Image (cartoon, rainbow, N blue to C red):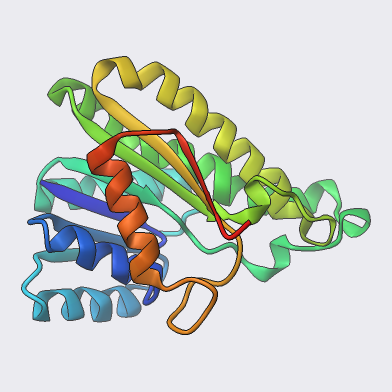
Amino acid sequence: MSLVIVGAGPNLGLAIARRFGREGFSVGLVSRNQAKLDDLAGQLRSDGITAAAAAADIRDSDALAAAIRSLAGELGEVEVLEYSPLPAREFMKPILETTAADVLGPLEFSVLGAVAAAQAVVGPMLEAGRGTILYTTGGAAIKPYPLRAGVGISFAGEVAYARMLNEELAPRGIHVAHTAIAGRIAAGGDHEPADIAEVLWSHHVDRGAFQTAIGF
């Protein structure tokens, strides 16, 4: 069984990989920088976790889907997809300074990427009759902030997509969940990465409520 993390990084992504890896999951990592991914994969292998990495620009839907499918081919079909890329700072302009062009990047990142990632795994999940798709965002998904308009808009679309996906897939054995986190996820930050990883593990095994809000 494998887990693929889209937006893998050294804080939350690595913590999620380790939490699921302890349960016997192989871990696939996706982000834009291959060198950083290789370093993360090396750390996981040092922990005894089978890991692989595939670089892709999350704003390129075809490249993202190809990366996920490549990891599935190497590690086995994806049982859990975690989608939690960190938005760029330029996505967070004040609402009155945000143009239509400014919204394009956040939508590609949070909505189009979310759809492409799900479509890359949902077919095999349906065939298997099981699977988990996890969307993890910042707090603007629940409480939009006018000074960070782009993510407020794009997270809303991502959550709407995830909610509809859950309603459609739940009767067929696939659980979709959204976790919104207000505050910084880092060692010594507002939230410890390992604590958030535990919440996401609970989503997979308990298959409870669609949405969890942390730090509000």
